[in-house]
Image 1 (tube, rainbow, N blue to C red):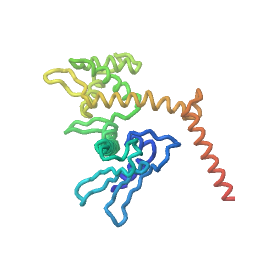
Image 2 (cartoon, helix red, strand yellow; image 1 turned 90 degrees about the vertical axis):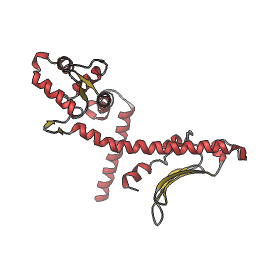
Image 3 (cartoon, rainbow, N blue to C red; image 1 turned 120 degrees about the vertical axis):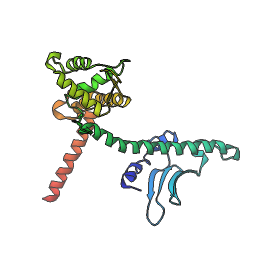
Image 4 (cartoon, rainbow, N blue to C red; image 1 turned 180 degrees about the vertical axis):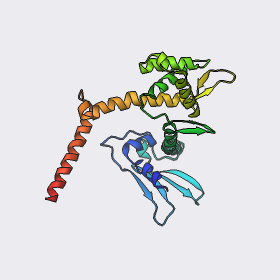
Length: 268
C-alpha cells in the first residue's frame, strides 16, 4: 500500500471512526478493542479494522481486485442472537460496514485529489496564448471576486462586466469609477481561464459555472467562518473571550513549554 494510504487508513481503528463504519455508538466505557492493523510483511498487504469481536479485512485478492469482507465472530456485539434465521440481518450489517469503509476511503482519496484543484486555483494558469495569475486564497483582492460569484450564480441570464465592476467596488469598499475597464477585463479573463465562469455564446454576458460556485462558496465560508474566528481564538494577541479553542491552544502551549523546560534540565 502507498505510504499516504497507510497514513489515512491507520486512523480508522479509532473509536470515533469505528462507530461511523459500524453505525454503533462507542463510549469510554464500551468494552472491546477498536484498532487498525496493517499487515505487510511476507504476505499480501491487508488492512484490518477491529470492532469488539468483529473484523473488517481488506486486501488485494490474487493481486487483481480489492476485496473487503466483514467477519462477525460474536453476533451479540450487534444485539442479535445466534440462531440461523438471523443470518440475513447479519448480512445487512456486514455489507453496510463494507460500504461505509469504502466510502470513508473514497472521501479520503478525494481529499488528496482536491489538493491539486486547490493549487490550480491558487497558481497561475495558461490556455494557449492567454495567461492569468492565480486566485490566492484569502487574498483581499481575490476574496471580493469569490463573493461576487456567489451573487451572480443566482442570475438566470448571467452577468455583464458592468455588474462585476459594481459589485466588486461595493465588496471592496471602493468607488466604481476607480476601477478601470481594463482591470475588469483582466478579472473576467482570470476567472474564465480558471474555469470559474464561462462566456455565454453570442453575447457579452458570463455565467458562473458549478465548479466556480462551489469553489467560491467554500473559499469564502472557510475564510469567514473558520480562519478568521479561529485565529482570533488561537493567537495570544487577538484573544477577546474565553472559548474551547482558546483553552485547547493554552493547554498545548503549557505542555510544549513543560517539555522544553524538561529538555533544558536534562541538558544541564
